[in-house]
Amino acid sequence: MRQLHFLMAGGGTAGHVVPAIAVARELHARGHAVTFLGTRGGLEARLVPEAGFLIEWVQIGGLNRVGLLRKLRTLLQLPLAIGSAWRLMRRLRIAAVFSMGGFVAGPAVAAAILGRVPVAVMEPNATPGFTNRVAARWVKRALLSFEETARWFPPGRSEVTGRPVKAEFFAIEPRRAAADEPFTVLITGASAGSRTLNRAARECWPLLAASGAHVHLIMQTGAAEFSAMERAWAEYSKPAALTGEVAAFIRDMPAAFARADVIVCRAGGTVAELAAAGRASILVPFPFAADDHQARNAEAMARAGAGVMVHDAGMTGERLFAELAGLMKDPRRVQAMGAAAKRLARPGATRRAAEILEEIARKNTEEGLTRPSQSRNNTR
Image (cartoon, rainbow, N blue to C red; front, side):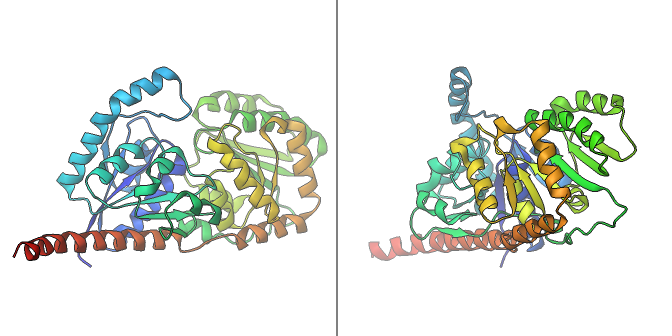
């Protein structure tokens, strides 16, 4: 196949950016060109250049679950952002758009629909996000993680592929710590961090210390609370059996997963990484997620025996300690949870996403070539 140029749309958080980078790498390996569209204030501004891809900028804000002033500002920005995306696609001769959803994807998806550029959307949650719901009837293909999500899209256009996950997560071996190694717990509130998880972790420290358990904590706090958490950890008088490390953002998350026995996290896109890595988890759904989709993700993991679900309001230091203490006492349960998570994994999602993008781009090109010929034939 000749080289094509694809536009990756979606940003703001690692959940939007990281899967798109995974698909971009696969497309690049197949000999295609890839450009990202994002905002300077989103995480894509750092992660995309680090991954070696070009990024173009758009100025846009959110429309869903925002205040009136923010919504009005976004509505004023939207026509200019769509126009900018449309000109970019014409200049680069974009063959297809890959959307991970989110407000950053909105202008690119709208411009693609208006310009008859095919769009494939990735929807990793049980209930689609705002952008994907609005664009659902016009997308060429929808790549899903849950069968039930198909009802939001036209019949025949959806496929359960799973969420693109870095290959490094699938390569993680089952965790079998030696007897003298600590029970390692990764606590992460995703790239932006979580006040709930940070507070619970901090409240849990003295309880872990008092228990005498040999524990190592790996904490990703997010930038907002990093300084306070780092300072509190440094000042805390810890016994030798309790060790830990605090980071605002963990660059090599697969390596952190590989070290962990249990992962305490939200239940967004991370659930796909948990499955790929085969790791036991304590899932705390973000209570303000659109349509409560994180709760549905966590419920699915819990039903499969892959994780424990704790509601945000109930996640305290005492509750976190109780859950961790129970798992530390039952290593077979931890292994069983990891194995159950692994059974939910969908390897090949990245490859399939790239294949679908090639398919819709090729079909659109073929249709574009045949339309003029058919028109000329009709005039004879």
